[in-house]
Image (cartoon, rainbow, N blue to C red; front, side, top):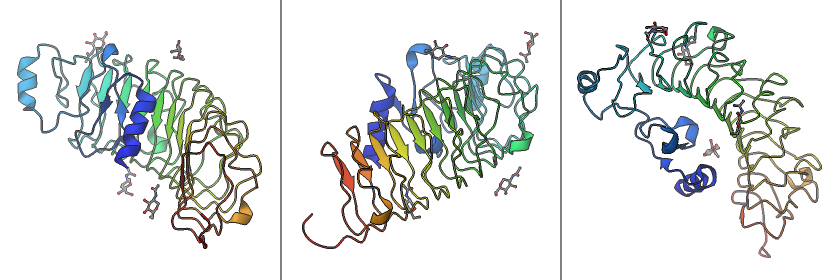
Length: 319
Ligand SMILES: *[C@@H]1O[C@H](CO)[C@@H](O)[C@H](O)[C@H]1NC(C)=O
Ligand SMILES: *[C@@H]1O[C@H](CO)[C@@H](O)[C@H](O)[C@H]1NC(C)=O
Ligand SMILES: *[C@@H]1O[C@H](CO)[C@@H](O)[C@H](O)[C@H]1NC(C)=O
Ligand SMILES: *[C@@H]1O[C@H](CO)[C@@H](O)[C@H](O)[C@H]1NC(C)=O
């Protein structure tokens, strides 16, 4: 697990540093990559770090009563882990990084961010966000938004409309049962989409349409009974572990020239459900087929480096 995280940091962060966890939050299980060159804060919570009153006394700029505002990151508002039931109404216009995780917020009203339209990160993990209480226009009113995290909430739908410039959308561990066609159509720059730990059963043909920059898509821990159709060919890391897949369609990986990591562990795959050439994809580096019902080793491309097959029904010694 540690190793996988390091790999992802290297793969996605480029030269940037990779942020470890400073709190109990896992941000959907993927580390947050920060770019200090553009002023991104390297701390995701101030809880337990320095006395909040100290920040207040040291800072001459306005700071909402519900938040802590460190002088070294004037654009960051730390309003996390304090039982808030609403988004603070006095967020100053300098706000770019808004930390609201670990509260009890269930709604985003239409004027929720009227003074903080420069917001680039909105972190709402571990709240009680409900889909029908997110006002239609509120997120679109944040044209600079790049990272939207709403993991561990009560969402039943994809929130939207979403701002065009979004790069990361993390919606893991909600109760999302379906994606509407074209829900992500305007998100040309989205590179990471976390949807694991939801209740998705099927993926429609147009559900991921428009995601032309997507690198990592995590659909693990859903209720998928068929392999998702029409995935964007830019994908490099595709995770569909812990679903109910018994078979893969013919050619379902055709055209995925950049796919490197494919995880289908903890499903119901049987050999009869695997088309002969399905894993004959030269770009795949790691293929996880563990915890399935395979009785023999399926053919794979010779360039494959890591193949996981434990906890299947494979007998014999010729492997
Ligand atoms: C909100 O913006 C208006 C106009 O820029 C400004 O007058 C007001 O003081 C701002 N409110 C807060 C809480 O910063
Ligand atoms: C969110 O879900 C939790 C657990 O299922 C529940 O206790 C809570 O009442 C829900 N909150 C809202 C606002 O629906
Ligand atoms: C998408 O990314 C490109 C390259 O960084 C940028 O020029 C463009 O403005 C972004 N699109 C949106 C809608 O933000
Ligand atoms: C899948 O579920 C099993 C059993 O609940 C769990 O042990 C395993 O960690 C899960 N796999 C992933 C990739 O989350």
